[in-house]
Length: 174
Image (tube, rainbow, N blue to C red; front, side, top):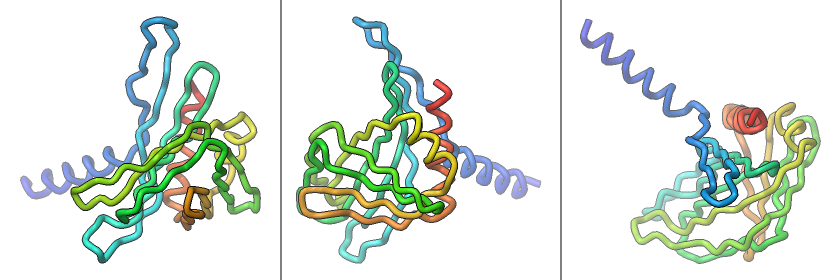
C-alpha cells in the first residue's frame, strides 16, 4: 500500500511540474499596471558530450498592459558569448505550413555560466492577436532564431508544441 501511494505521489508531482501555470501577477507600484507571466516550459533539448547540459530552448508567455509577448530562453551548452539584437527575427513554422515571423524587441547578450551550463540568453518577441490565433491553431514544427553568429534551429516535437499552444491560450485569457 505504501509503495502504491509513493508511486502515485511521484506521478502526481511529475504531472504538476509539467503543467503550464500563470505566475503570481506583478503590479507596478507607480502606474498600477498588472503584468502576467506563465511558467517557463522546455520545448527543445539536445544532449551534449562536452560536459555541459547541451542545447535547450524554453518558452513562456507574458502580458504587460495590452501587449502580449513570447519569451524564449536559449541555452547553448557552449562557452562562446552571443547576442540577439533588437529587430532580429524568430521564424516559427507551423505544421499547417504557416510561418509566424516575430521581431526581437530588446537587445540581449548571453551570459556564460561557470557551472557547466554554457551560455544563455533571454529574448522577447511581441505577438499580435493574429499570431496568437495561428500559434494556438496548429502545432509548431520548427523554430529558427537569428542571433549574432547566424541562426539557432530547433525541431519541435508534438508534445512540446502542445505546451506552446497552452501557454499562448493561457496568457490570452488575461
